[in-house]
Amino acid sequence: MRGSGVSRVPFLKMNGLGNQIVVADMRGSKARVTPDAAIAINAQPQTKFDQIMAIHDARTPGTDYYIEIINSDGSRAQACGNGMRCVVQALGAEEGRRRFTFETLAGILFGEEAADGQITVDMGTPKFAWYDIPLNEEFADTRQVELQIGPIDAPVLHSPSVASMGNPHATFWVKDDVWSYALDRFGPLLENHPLFPERANISIANVLAPDRIILRTWERGAGLTEACGTAACAALVNGARTRRTARKATVTVPGGDLVVEWLDNDHVTLTGPAEFEWRGDLDPATGAWTRSEAA
Image 1 (cartoon, rainbow, N blue to C red):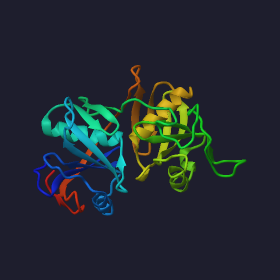
Image 2 (tube, rainbow, N blue to C red; image 1 turned 45 degrees about the horizontal axis):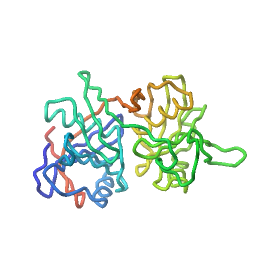
Image 3 (tube, rainbow, N blue to C red; image 1 turned 120 degrees about the vertical axis):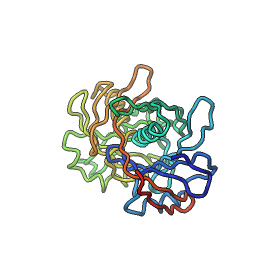
Image 4 (cartoon, rainbow, N blue to C red; image 1 turned 180 degrees about the horizontal axis):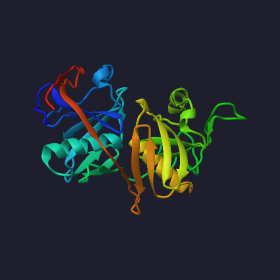
């Protein structure tokens, strides 16, 4: 998969529990995937994606690669757990090893593939201070903030827990079926609410048991998604700190199950599968691409 420094670079079309991922191999190139290229790639049905994971040469000693993450609207993301699992699988198949250390905007993270194909990624440490998330308003306790959608006396969603997993998340707790909420309508409004200066990922969570969460997410910069790894992590840590859940749980998203654990060292790990679909090459400046028939 390694890039050659020419204008077009190899890419893999993959998914993590239905979270559509493009893994672009930028190694050996000083170019970056431009916002216009991302928008153009996403506009094509065959390459529509939630995130592009661009693999760059390492910038920091002790790391294997630098990973830049681009949303489907061309904006940059700090973290993407499902995309990181795809990167681990792609590099593992190429290099014949199972563990990697990456640098991202969210910090230094590791990823490791087990013998059964399940991939665990270190998602770093959660942040709960209002200025770290960040919020535009000071809240002493972010386990529950003043935010609602719907009539003031009968809100449809209200009082979310908010946290950062390298990107901002709001988790709304509900007792009903998460599919009974019009997240496609509420999501864009809440993502762009003035409370969130960098916008936010918006999730609806139903806790079935201390070790079981059902989750739907409107992903910042991508919209409704089959799976959002950082949202699953945020739901687990928000659940644990509000005493709704244990520190380890299975989080069921539309695409399937993820296992999230908040470790004693404060790091959060995310475990789940990744799937290769097909490969091709693309122009990181324009988004023009061709598909290769080779697997």
